[in-house]
Amino acid sequence: MESQLDLIKIRDEIFRKIGRNLLNFQKIELMLKHLVANGRISGYMSEIEENHERRKKSVHKQMMGNLVGQFFETTFSELDDSPQSTNELKEPYLSFSFNVNADADFYEHKKQALKLLTDDRNDLIHHLLQRFNTDSIESCMEIEQYLDQQRERLIPEYDFLMSLINNFENAKKIHTDFLNSEEGIKQFELSFLQQSPVVLLLLNISIQQPRSDGWTLLDNAHRQLRLTLLEDMGHIKNRYGYKTLKELMLASEFFDIHEEPTKKGGVRVLYRPKPELGYGAFNRVFNSLLDTSRRTARADGWTLLSTAGQEIEQSLAEDFALVKEKWSFESLKDLMLQSEFFDFTEERVNKINICELFRPKADLFPR
Image (cartoon, rainbow, N blue to C red; front, side):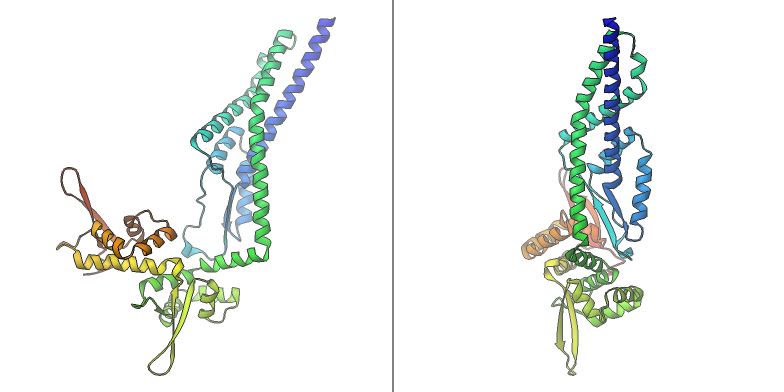
């Protein structure tokens, strides 16, 4: 009789521990869904809510194994969820991401731990009862030990995910509070203005058509804007209430404006990007490349890249450092490749060394 009571007691305890572990696995699954569904949110203002709801619905249907994979793809990797082209930016584009920075050892450890947790969860749901003899005290004791060990493996990952949830919610609150603040609204509108096609074209014109002193005629830029971006100019003026292009440019905080008298007694307006933005520096580096090509090119039109690099290092080192910082270029060749204004080739100097050469693209800079 006592043995039967012991069996009933331990069996009831096992059922309790099965329920305990199962509940904890469900909590972990819900935390993974929350992090995957909400850890990355991006899209244009008019579509971001719909994008978010679509993502939540998709994640809601995922099994734990898929969730773990998506969790590592999103939470442990950098965000690259920007619009296809800044020239297509017709309305504010929002992007929010929650990421974990970790070294390779930590990443692999957590990946293996959550993979093992997924196997544990599947075993508990699909296979445990097949080897559980409810009429055997020995079997009950074996299963109880297994459930306790499973819980010990589960607790660190439960705590890890809970800490991420807490950090995520704190970050989201800070982000939301800032966006709803007066300063946040101001910065959001300023960012949209600075990324608008009108401001980007003004910057490009200033690089392509500056005078020798670095200033660009605003009238020339205005004509190009009216030809190519008249609708965009109207949209920005309606959104912000700017009456003139000059007023819009000053509000963007990207430009210096200068007025100078003309010979006929009038006034011409000029502009240039603020020096700290690096556009003037980019223009000087770019013109140096073209000048080096004109002066030192071989008969076949190719110029040693090392020659251009040496001249920039001697005369434009600060400008090039600023350009690399602002645009994240790793090298002079990287800058030239991304500008898409130059062709490159390589030649073997000897059995060991190879030299790199460049020339301006013929269709853009006819000789």
